[in-house]
Image 1 (spheres, rainbow, N blue to C red):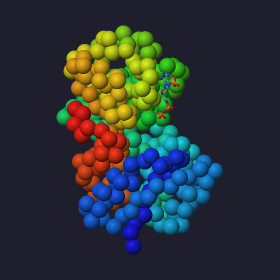
Image 2 (cartoon, protein in one colour; image 1 turned 90 degrees about the vertical axis):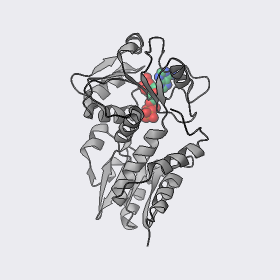
Image 3 (cartoon, protein in one colour; image 1 turned 135 degrees about the vertical axis):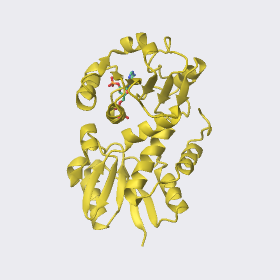
Image 4 (spheres, rainbow, N blue to C red; image 1 turned 180 degrees about the horizontal axis):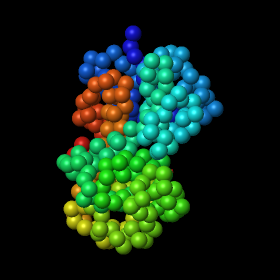
Length: 281
Ligand code: ATR
C-alpha cells in the first residue's frame, strides 16, 4: 500500500505541490502519494488527528495553518519553534513531529544562485516582516553571515523578528535607511507581497543598488516582478521565489522518504504550472 502524504491549507486549490511531489515520487519508483486537503480552521485539529488514524507518513502545512497547527503536534523542532511556524509534519512511528523547511529551502536557493555557500563576508538585507521573513531570517542568521538587516513598513514587526530569529549583531532598519544604505548589501531579498499585483509600489527603491548584487524576490507569480526586472536592468543577479518553493518541498520529500529528490524535475513542473520562462538567471 502507498505511503500517504499531503497538504493541509485553506484554500489549497492553487497549490502545485501535489504535481511537484508526485512527479518526484514516481521518478524514483517510490510508493508514495501526495494529495491536497482544503481544511477550514475549525477542522484543523481533526485533520491532524486523521494523519495518525490513517497512518500518514506526513504532510505539508500552508496558509493559514502554519502557526495554528503547532499545539496539535506531539513534538516541534527547535528551528520550527524559533520561527514560530510549521510547514512540514513527519509521522515518526505514531509521533507527529513539526518541522520548518521554508527558511532552509530559501537558503539552498540563494546558495545555488551564487554557486557558493553563504559566508562570514556576506551582508544581507531582508525586506518585510511577515511569516516568510521569519523563516528566512532564522535560516540566514544560522549561516553566520557578516550581517542580516531587516527593514519593514511596520518597524515593530521587524524588531520582533530580530529578537526572535536574528543575532545580537544583526540590525533593524527603517525602509528609508535601507534604501539609503542599499549599496552596502551584497544580497537583497523581498519577502513582502509588494509586486504580486500589477499596480503595487516597489517594496524598496533600487536607486543605490550596486551592480552584481544578488536580488531575490520570493514572489513567483508574476514570474519576474517589476522590482526584479528593474534590479536586472541595474546589473543585479536576480532570482524569483520558485527556488524557495522547490527546495522547501525537496527538504520535506527527504524527511518523508529518506531520499534526495530530482530537484530539476520538481522545478520544471513548478515553472510550467506558473507559466514562467525556465531560465530566469
Ligand atoms: P507572509 O506571511 O506571506 O510573509 P504577511 O504576514 O502578510 O505575509 O506579510 C506581508 C509583508 O508585506 C509585511 O512585511 C507587510 O508589511 P507590514 O508588516 O508593515 O504590514 C508587507 N506589506 C504589505 N503591504 C505593504 C505595503 N502596501 N507597503 C509596504 N509593505 C507592505
